[in-house]
Every structure is written in C-alpha cells, then in structure tokens.
Length: 196
Image 1 (cartoon, one colour):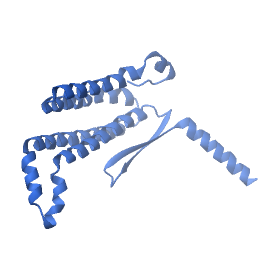
Image 2 (spheres, rainbow, N blue to C red):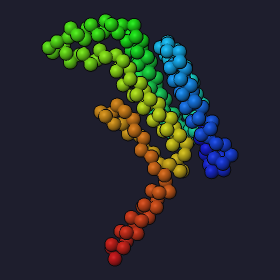
Image 3 (cartoon, one colour):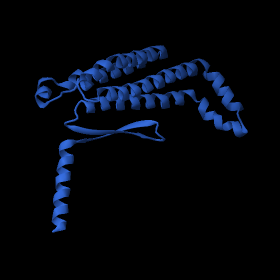
C-alpha cells in the first residue's frame, strides 16, 4: 500500500492505489445519498466501508510488521487499537439506529427531565453521541494504521504512541530519523563550542 523505498515509490504511485479510491468512494456515496435521500442507504454504505477497512487491515499489518524483532508486541498494540475502534464503531452504529427508531421518545424524555436529572439530557442526544463515538473510532483506526506503518519503517521514522485526554485517545508522535540525528549533531557541536 505504501512504498518501502525510493525505488518502489517511483515504481508504484501508492496514492493512486489507496487514497484516490477511498476519497472517490466517500464522494460517490455522499452524492448518491443526496440524490436518493434514504438514510438506510447511507447506513448500509457506512457499514460496508467499515467492514471493508476492517477486512483489509490484517493484510496491511502483516505486510508492514513481518520480520520485526518485536513483531508480537507491535501486532498486539495494533490489534488492540483496531478492536477498540471496532467496538466503538459498533456501539456508535447501534446508538445511531436507536436514535433513528426512537427519536420522538428521546425528545419527550429530554423535555420532562428537570432538576438534578437535567444533567442526563445531553446523554440522550443519541445522534451527537453517535458522532462522538464515530470520531473516537476513527481516531483509533488512523492511529493504529499509522502506528503499523511507522513500525515497518523504523529506519526512516521514529514513532512514539501516547494516550491523551485521560488516556482515552491515541496520539502517534513521529519524526524522521535524519532530522533528529542532524539536530543531535548540532546540539553536540553547540555544546562543544560553549565548553571551549
């Protein structure tokens, strides 16, 4: 999916094989939904895209992390993030469907909440909860895929996986190794100059 070397990058335009089709599908589904206007079509397309990504992920991971000395650890971290993304996405999808079926009733319940129970009102905004969970799932998916990609390119990229916002959301810090080594040399030269 991604080039491993400069020679490979010139041979295979990876962006045409991966990025362009993904954006094309998203744009096609959006325009089709605007034309058809049926939410079930939108939901089914969403489910097909998610299932497609989940099914493609193991092959992508195998290609990028095979032959690493700590392959099992990397694979465990990557699959853990993918599992969290899948659980969040399934939960979001279920909440979305509950919202579609029971929207009138949820509105009615929100209007009768008062006093200390008013705090529960935002939790009954199921459409908003669906968006929040979907974003969280996308965050785990992107972080997991990027983590695997970086681990397959350890000679070119250093990466560190950290969790933000109370340890809930993954963030991958990356930097090219060449730039880091250059900065170290400059700092060492500066240190030596200051010593003299």
